Amino acid sequence: MERLRVEHRDLDDAITALGRAVGDQLQLQRLKRRKLALRDRIRQLEDQLTPDIIA
Image: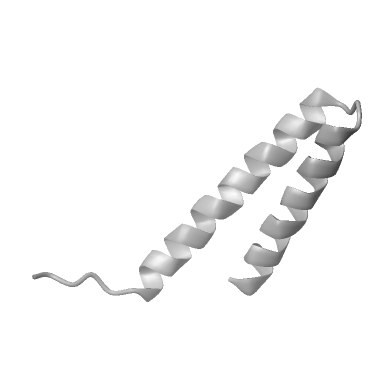
């Protein structure tokens, strides 16, 4: 999970850098999609680690 978090942070940095420069918009969209997919995967793994508590 830590590897996914590091990759997520790295993508955030890359998106920020690419956004400042007049960069390739398609590449920027791909990076953002990958970042969102990583966020979803991290949340899914966290949910698996945390048991549901039925009140």
